[in-house]
Image (cartoon, rainbow over all chains, first blue to last red; front, top):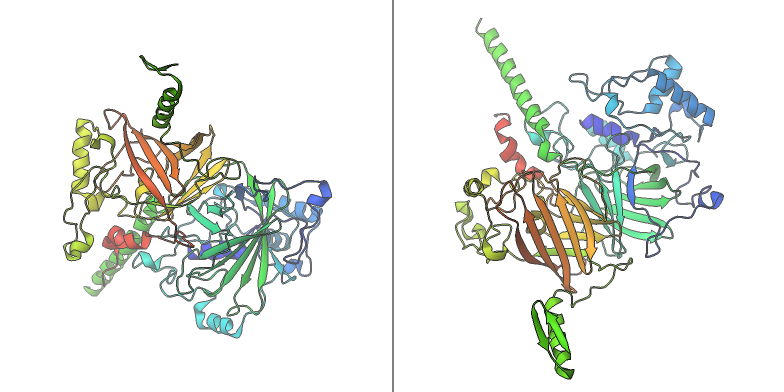
Length: 356
Length: 271
């Protein structure tokens, strides 16, 4: 499950748009182009309310096949789409990883590798995944402009070399080795039904969020795990640095027609950072159907410069469902009991062997 | 002038008529004399951080103080007394249900979903000993509860139906003058109403009424209806107080780790 989370996080996902590559500039080609005006709340702010989904196929980093290529032509998108449609087996393993990479590999090698992330027990069928959004972007990362992560700092390189990966550095806050199940704390936060992270950027599976706005606070309610990120809009300071929360401590303000949310005080890192990361989100509604959601990740202990990725959230008419994860977490019992059964079987076999 | 109230007729003239009218009006509108500041759409603004100051979560009915369940915690964890929040102090159980309630209460620690960090449902989430936050918009009101990061979306003036039972139920809201009225249905039968073992079935229907009675206080009235468990509908009533301290906010009380040992400890690897 930890691998799954890493894959989901690494891929991110967004519906692309014909958007400028650099972060922080005005979004071109939308309102002015077709006369669309953003709907407003009674207090005059852009109305971002409703339920939004993130089901894009765009990968986090630009695949090597597209080096130097900021966007695809419509014909190129259709070609990939058709390749995937021909090859995907709805009854086959769920594709949590990069659709685009699979499609590109198919084009290059003729092989479509729809294989489970968990070869021991298998996983969901592809049927359970949401229909994906295709567009012309070649990466979610818009800064650096080559669509790759910026260089790591020497400390981060050292962490990776020590086998810590870029994982969180707070002990006890994430799972141990993937297979270990001595106790519930060995399992990832998602398997324990504690958190799927915030901001949640995973694509294609339960990616829904509902936004509710008042002048005093904006709420981003993530369906997984029924988590309301309540963002005060009154300019108050963050909690003291010594106080950490799994979902950090968000603070919001309006920058013209863009909602800016700055989150600090994390327990764990974000996208491979240390817990001292600062994440700045910018939500801009660019059409009836889309919000451009830019996330800037700042951690001088991990990357030599801040970097920004952009996800296009698409409006949906669906309701959020209650994700009562812990209340129905029969998996945890199964995982732990299964591990104990394996151990008992191994002990029995060893005893038999020893007694011959 | 003649003033008719029910079958009685009062006759008053001049100044005394005005006095009589005034006092009748104030009797009928005592909950509505305060007019809360308006939200941007002109409705009473209930946005803010609120919390009860009572022992309803221990026991909805009037109760004396008594020994808590953990001897070592002594007076730090005794069960505090409370005058109760139930109108008439009676919860009208059917006979089988009254026995079940007693059994629940006697086995509180092993049965109460709160102990396992399960979402508390409505109305219990309102009177847990943790703050709640109301964020009010026009078509949607969101209530976030600090306990286990529970939350619910109240769909205003909606006819949408619940897709499935939920721990926090399905909430449809509307305004009746100064009062926010919320109907909650489709709640999982597993939620309790307090630590004393008061419970319900999947037929539970809850109607909440929130009315601001001054700038920092809400009157909270709850009607409970469950024909599978009770002999008639009944009500509870209490106050919610606004958190006035500067920069008040909900913090994270993600309690699953606190419940893991008691829930899964028996499956832990033996050293």
